[in-house]
Image 1: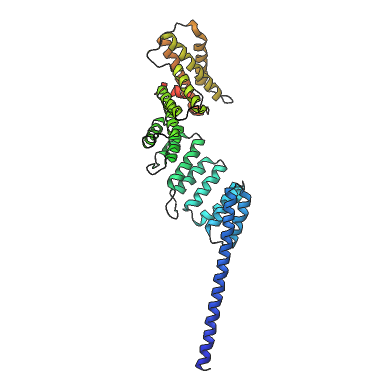
Image 2 (image 1 turned 45 degrees about the horizontal axis):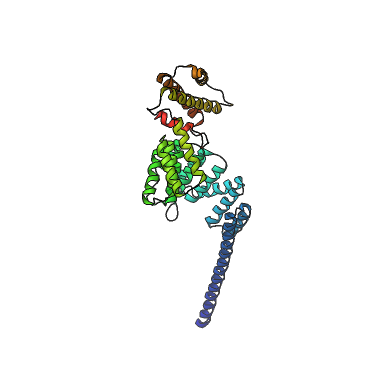
Length: 359
């Protein structure tokens, strides 16, 4: 075979190879474009609350481009939203087997565990997400706030406060810092919450949420006069706002129940201490409904009944008032140990009163 023929055959082979590669690339591009279309449609449906429809779209995208982890992860997210938790968990387990340090996958698993109400596992996967690998800058603060919201919903105050103290709020928006301050209140740290609200107001004196939040922090600290001032200022900015008026009235009510001012006459302090003791007794009794009360708790409740039964017959001395308040503190500590400090009622006067008495 002569050289020209060999060169011709070689050129044909190269040409066919080039065409074949071009066709393959074109086919890949078409598949990727179709997968992207299904992915975008899935995101749209997921945002609209259609988890099942989104799962169908993401499944199609994953079938077309199996090596793209986004589609597999989005499928798991959609299955979680649709309540198909077993399928979501299987998908995420497979992905974590391939890369256990992937931040987004661990975050998706944490959210799944929240849906399953597996608190310990959810906490674990949130922390894996926090310290996992992310493409670009890791959304550390956003993930930590999400974890904090979950801990707050579970009433886990110590764990919540630990997460909040790790947040860096220097670059956070006012809305983000208000969210953190609200969580600090939920964590039983009203002093830190008040500091955060004051920093916001220093930069933005007209921030109504920060003003009302400062009032709530003052209430939680037992500073009812400071709370009233904050709510009055908030009402000045939003005249007639019923929610603010309600909290202002609540602060005034607490001031009228507070048994600690030195100016109180003996009779007034005695009556106020009786009201606090009655609230503490009722709160512990409600907490213990359906539970087996300890001998100590039963004895405290009996002592409270006896003290309250004395009513106005007892001589209203300062010592008797202090005895009532001491017993109220014991009842409250028992209540906190059994059911936590939150009663779930923002209009319950007992938690702020007891916070002030126990400091």
